[in-house]
Structures are given as structure tokens and as C-alpha cells.
Image (cartoon, rainbow, N blue to C red; front, side, top):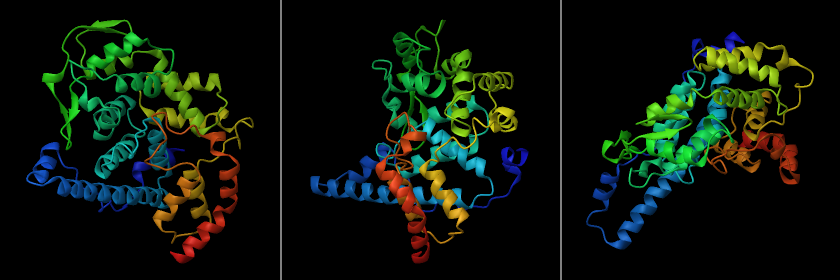
Length: 350
């Protein structure tokens, strides 16, 4: 367990993607369009979109190849967990660079401090764009990020009111981007007094996150999701309560929680073992590893997971994938039966 959790000690020199399209600022895009007629602008936009689609497709394969070859499996499994938890989709966030940036946030902070992770995700260009907070101003606060931050990312349903959402949205006004990096636009920030979750103050986004992390529901919500991802859909309340207590006591560090989870008797109980249905990503990566299929082209790996219902970088909505039994229907079950043969053939062709 220590080897798995403290994976930083294991070298893994995996090449960075060299196919990403450099994101342009809004100003740079306008400069490149300057002087073009309508048809030329349309052709330029189509060129940008085509390049980004190809780069995002390559990024999916790159990530799956990294999963398949890593000697640090928990690093990639946690990145996959957070990708489903803090879901953004390349269908809306069309920049390959923005998608890779968030993927790296999940990888580098996936077992670190959860409060830092929430902050980094909220400031990432992908999340700012996906939930429209890059357009949130004091005159017109956008509530998407505030709502999902509480409902899906930290507290869970039933732990806040609609008014809490409105007040929290005001706190995050001004969190934006110029397309190149995070930018706090003070002119767009609502500096007035706000009241949410029982607290009153002139909160900005950073202070609002502090208030969220004072809520007891947060640790239980996150530890429940970790239990369901790693152990079983059937939650063990006693085990989760112990994990949540450690989470709070250790200042929301994730490594102690994961270590406790993987060493707990509850994790190895007969009621837990062999109860999960592998996600398409786990299934594909495990098959290529177990069958020693070293030459399957990365794009084939990405196509295989997508056909089984998990098109990584393209979650179906902000909730991510439902998982477990939702992975299985008449179509995907047949595809799973045929998958080993298809991967072997792809490896031979590759």
C-alpha cells in the first residue's frame, strides 16, 4: 500500500504530448482574423477547429497509453477519478491545451491536498470555460460554478439553499481567464457583503472555499465517493465515517485517507470483493496489460473505451459517468465479449 500510495518515489519518464495546439488569447484570435473577409474567417475558424479535434483525439490516446505503461497506477487512477468528479468536456472546451492542463492538475494534485485541488480546478481554463465562470461579473453573476461546486464537487445535494448558490456565485465573480491563464478581474468582482452557509462577509472566491471546507458534509461526501470508486457501490457507513474523520484531522490531505482505505479490513470484506463492474477505461487498460498487447495504437484504445460508453475527455455531462451497472447494456455487454479479439487484432495491425 505504501508503494502504491507514495508513488512519487517511482521514476516514470513518460514523454509530454508534443501535439497540443497553443491556445490563443481572445486578442490574438481577433488579430489573426483582422482584414479577412467572411469566407476567409470561416475557413480560419474551421482550420482551428480541425486542428483542435485532432489534438484532443491524440490526447485521449496519449493518456490511455500512459495508463497502460505506468509503474505508478494510483496516479492515473486518481486522475481518472477526478476527471469524472470534476467533469469537463472537450465538446465545449475545444482547446487541447486547456484539457491537458486540467488533466495535469488531476495528476499532480490527485493525492495531495483536496482544498488546493478544488482551487486549482476552479482556476483552470477548462473549468472556467465549461461552467461559464469566465463570463461571471458583478452585474451578471453566473451560478453554474457555484451550484456544481457545492452539489457535485464538495458538499452534495441537500446541504445548501438556492440563496446560498446566488451568494456564492457573487463571491466568484471576477475569476476569469484571457484564454492564456487564470486572471482575477477585480473590476468584475462583487465586493459587497454576502451571506451563505450561515456565514456573512465580503467573501471572494478564496474565502468562499474556506467556508465550504468548514462544512462537516464535505469530508463525508468525498470519502463516500472514494469508497464507491475503489470499494463498492454499497457504502459502509462506519468505514466512511472513519475516513472522513481522518480527512478532517489531516487538513484534507488525500494520501492518509487512501492509505487508511486500502489497509482497512472493510476494504477486503467478502461483501465488497468482486462486486464492481470495471469501467471501460479500466477494462481496456487491464486487457492490454494482461495480454501483453504492447503495439495497440493509442487511437484504438480510445475508440475501444468510447464504444463501451466512456469517451474520456468527453463525459456526458457535469455529473460525469454514472458507472457500475450503468456500464452494462445489451450492446456494451456484447462489445465487452468481443473486446479481447479486437484488441489482439489491433495489436497485430499496429
